[in-house]
Image (cartoon, rainbow, N blue to C red):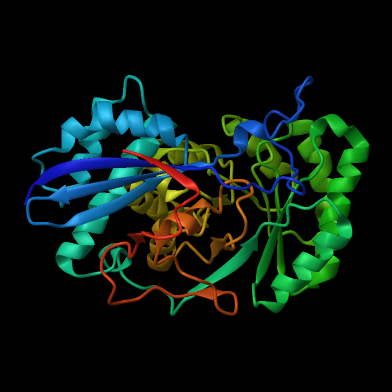
Length: 389
């Protein structure tokens, strides 16, 4: 069996976008002269990769990170490396792509491109072997998947409270909110961030996990004080409080607080996570399979994490991450973005794919009899997309 075609489809959203209530800290928040520090971190396009074989199998992969540039990387740099190769040789093909691009890759967009291809290759592998990807990665480790609700963007405290109450009633065992106030708001902003956590904790009670997302928006001094103020609220974790390259500062912060620290959404390959392990930077790894290097790298990172007592709770609840969660003993739960109006970009996949797992009573299930990743492309309801091949 050989790869005969690699196609990329860029889905660009042109429909309505809800931004009124979506305000939270980002890496640009500490900088002055920023009228909209979130602009660079909203994304309204998505990339789909289709890989076809001479036996008629088609595998689907995807990338949400800089999809337009990722498309160019695949089209101009990676496709030629794949044509004529056996798609089942996933280990070899990952190394071929990684080593061919190491001079200009290693992190970011190039690894996102490799990830999208790797997911498509595993999708083919599952279809050829008539098994879901999670079975090929080691099989089911739990009857179903526990999820936590990931949104709570609103800074209005009454709306925040009501949203948390509503999704607690839907059966979710955890709630993750964002820091609505940036570093430049100083002490008063910090108090407001703490008040948001307090409101969510009051809304859901003591038996529901509460998590706080910092989205790389703070520095070490602010993070230390913030964590001290948050101690009474029993956070399950505090996420990405610092820039991802501040590995040693994460390690310092971890020694300062008893609140578990999570991150890795913006880290890449086994090499990046090995550095996090060596420095003792995090309690929880949150890679995204469609950024970190695909299933091939995700498996390696899960095994490293398991040996070091680190939890793995991937970013995003999409199918490529759910297969990892279901097959990994280090992974206790999955993130869940509900299907809503297009707001930040995390909702895009609901509008492009059929087959995404839908939470019931806060839990997800994957089908033992559905081969591959389990996704197909929508053929209807695409009127708000411009699709470029």
